[in-house]
Length: 81
Image 1 (cartoon, rainbow, N blue to C red):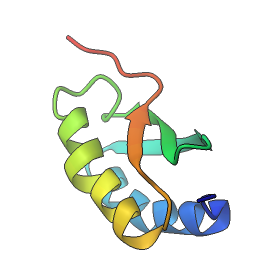
Image 2 (image 1 turned 120 degrees about the vertical axis):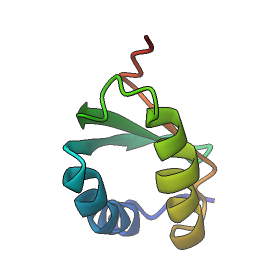
Image 3 (image 1 turned 180 degrees about the vertical axis):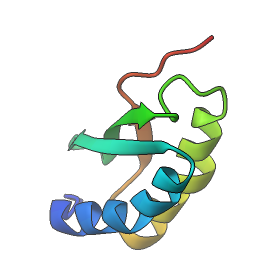
Image 4 (image 1 turned 135 degrees about the horizontal axis):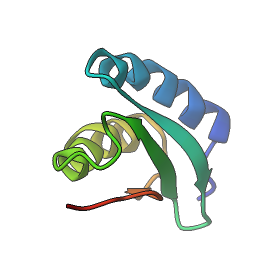
């Protein structure tokens, strides 16, 4: 199932203020044919030890609920300490 990119971007825009409140942000990079959404984590989110939890339990969960076809979310600049 193809992911509706416009709905995906709208949903990310709704999530973004929560990330920005903690000094972070995310930039949409793309989505592949398998429904894997790629995001670039920015600001405080980039390299944060909790970023994987934010992705899986926050962003991914919300996108899966609101955007049909999304299967997973991954960070393209995932820096681990």
